[in-house]
Image 1 (tube, helix red, strand yellow):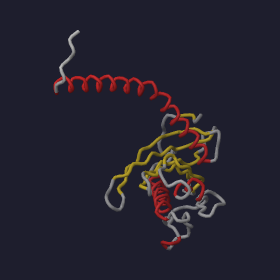
Image 2: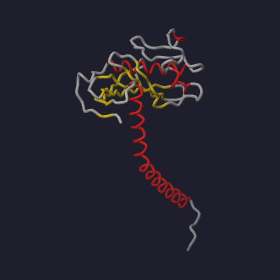
Image 3: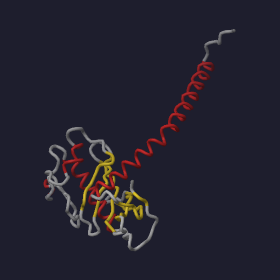
Image 4: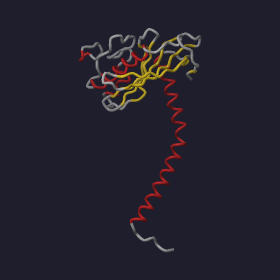
Length: 207
């Protein structure tokens, strides 16, 4: 068999072939893992809704997508999961809200009762510094230093350094501001959304 001559054309053909083969392999692997990854995300969301609403037997009666502009005119998207208990009583909503933290996007799920009181929260995504900004998952929980549970953000929640009543995470003021902004934005989006009593929708049991 004649050996291929070393030339630019042959090198390009070889590299192209390798790229096509690798692309096919990656696409196949992505196809295999896409389902399990989506299932894992769905379970994490369902568990998060139960957690922030403080109820285990709960269903999502209606899902809304709300778009609002921030102070700089940037459009923000919120997903609002209107919830009910097994008897169909309105429990409020869990709201997905994303802001930019110190290390990247900070996605928060916040639970509100029908009056807008914060029932709980959980971090769905965060890229904050371990040991500092990453403490946001615990710092603002009930009984902790920055406790926001039970508050109604009619007046925006702010850190004490900015004249507010919430203690910032030690050495992580940027993350604390980003977190509270996500909570404030979630509240505003929730208050702008009709309750489940106003509109009917397909119910989805949270498993």
